[in-house]
Length: 472
Ligand code: SF4
Ligand code: SF4
Image (cartoon, rainbow, N blue to C red; front, side):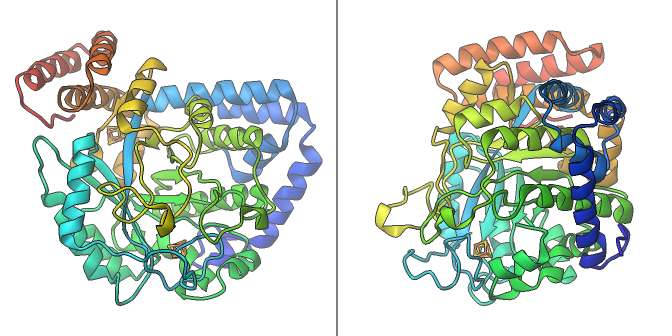
């Protein structure tokens, strides 16, 4: 029985309810009156339930699709202005005891070079990331009770926060590690993490179990209930996601929205972010094996309908996707992207050698962070290195109420401009600096609140004089 408030995975992600939803969407996908009515409702920016969202996604009418794209753009602009938050993944260790069939780090893969970073090596990686201009990291590690225990993760977070190379600073460490206990989540919270990220991969239990034949991750309920434990431990900001292409995307789309609904109903706060990875080639992984590939046009619709369905949630896209797809999806709702990413352990100091096969997936967008920043500016976006909210205690429902009232854009935009200025001063080439300064000038002039504008202008002058790290 479906119960969004239940603490049991199989009740808050209810298989029968998902199947009924898919059936309902299939039957009603050509009912344009119904669908336009749902979209009228969505214009209030209060989101959509999974059933309405699914019927909108299933509709193939070209005019409806244009309406969806336009609305997604409008909602994104309203809540997050035109800033795009930048981050980079940092792989700590690829030792893993799980058997995930779609990931080259699975325990039985003998082809890859296994590596775990020492604290000194982490220091070097972080310096390399700081020298690129990054301020926000997502750390990643396989699951291994003796090689990657929680103590190792905690020590690594401490090391990362302690490094200040030249003007460099990592100000927010998000954590993407295996599902764990409430006690361990409390330790992560105390270590000052930003978001706890855990991808569900697929919500389809039977297929989940086939895709995870061994290791602790094979326990569907333990994995699916992880966000509940994280929130119980006081981590307000959690990041969900599925690996599109593993399972029927429609099933996972509904599952993802059900999960968001569950967190909102149970903890008063939905996911802070949703990531939209699509399966990519990697060592020992034959993507042909996964015959649920999501074509580009469907993928764009997924991004746009998610934007409409959960307007308050940040949406993340990684370098798995090409420059072209990223550009299209930025306009449809993506609010955070990675740049200059290396998906191998130690990859920022030493680029992965082909024979090591140690990247978790192929990167499609191989541009440097500088190139990505320059490209975003050309597209009219403000690349943002902001980490202000969690440092100001704006997390969980405090954060959500700011987003829901539409006030967050008034904070995001000034912070984006100040952190971009910092980036331009310390890391940009001459041309990027010139066009970035111009963009800042134009955008400062558009800040509606005169007091905020004065504060930003004052801080921009201070940044010129060498001061750093301003935030609202
Ligand atoms: Fe290990 Fe994560 Fe890869 Fe699974 S997806 S094999 S848990 S690193
Ligand atoms: Fe993110 Fe808050 Fe900064 Fe906006 S102000 S970019 S929501 S940290």
